[in-house]
Image 1 (cartoon, rainbow, N blue to C red):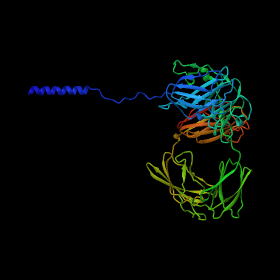
Image 2 (cartoon, rainbow, N blue to C red; image 1 turned 180 degrees about the vertical axis):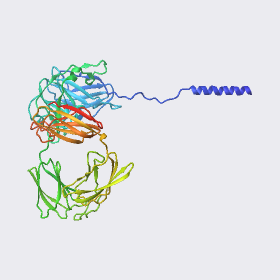
Image 3 (cartoon, rainbow, N blue to C red; image 1 turned 90 degrees about the vertical axis):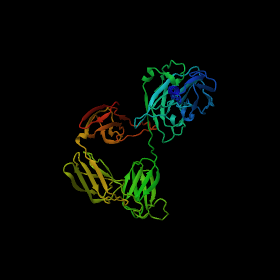
Image 4 (cartoon, helix red, strand yellow; image 1 turned 135 degrees about the vertical axis):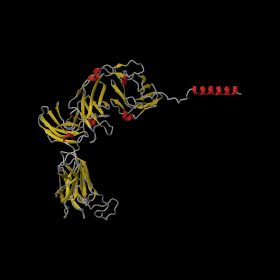
Length: 570
């Protein structure tokens, strides 16, 4: 019996060892994710061929692929009157021309991010196929960048046109002779063109007709023609698998070629017209126009003239009535000395109310919201801001509580005064002690809007900063010898303009009391001397005013002085 027990124990131990030694069953991972785009396996006829006589091109890829939005993403230069037919057959793209090709002409077909592998959608960034119907493929090119004229940012996906004729009306009436699109960094290259001088344009073509014919289309142009340069020889990579045009290594000469910069802008629409009269709130009337308002004149034609505040924006004249209209009021408004409209202002009606049903004063009102700026700033006063004008008052009580660590609360009082003028902001003119927590209390129902709304209790809490929170910037501006001034703007990290100066000559500006942080500086060449940036106009051959950015980082540290120099190139 004892021997049997020993045999059973040995058997159990052997079974445990065998089970422990068995391999785990693991689900296969499937290998690394495919992140490579398709490559070119075969081109028929070969990319760069001459004496092309047929109407079909076949391009085979290394894997199955999809073709995405050929209308926008495939560019043919020179443009064709009829688009080709694109067919995907297995791993092959078949391009069939439906238009008669010009004789002795080099054509480029550019595919921008539209050829993607079937499984993961990895796109070929840009694939260019060139061929010639003549004896040789043209070997010259135009190269440059398209930049937003106002922000200096790169423009992606913008058309670039080239014409061999030097005629001013070309982009307004004629489709381009050569065409391409910009890359994400704003760069473009129009390849395989004939030698010569070209008229060059960039266009945000909204209606895709390759013509500059809409007022809201952005355009860029060169003042003079641009000479095409010889294309550098393209050197193929070692691997035989990549034979396509995107997979070539361009020599350093390509990168060192100077870039022509085109500055994209939208022309100011100078045609003026009245758009609509808007009355969304009680006592507020907006006269909205199509374009910028340079001047205006208002004549009241009714017997009763309701007193009002007026503010003029870029394209809107806003009236805030000092008391709600009880009867209609007729006015005649002339804008820019050309557009005159007679308008009837009606008493405010709540949305959905029946005709003739007047809104009772004060009904469905929300409180007058009062915001504040500069709380805690050492060198700037606290500013109360209202969303619309408030009524005059000569006695608005303000309680200020300073919470001191050892002596407890120190309470003081002051009164605010609102004059009988257009008032949307109010300054609390008081010096606050450094590093001390403060609470400002303003009771409810002391501010009244033009529409009768009043405020809830206002409570502002802050701790005043110290001198050690601020630094100083001293910037030396070295201007070029131009006959026009420069507008200099200091901006915070969010892009808000903190200070604007106009310089007629080289000068040093000191910016004191800047909070520690990052800043930017922008300069505008003010060619017409009006103190603001102005756009261009192609028909008048007027370029937009240039904008320059100080490219060095400006970091202000507390209790430090920073000195910089900016030498602007003309």
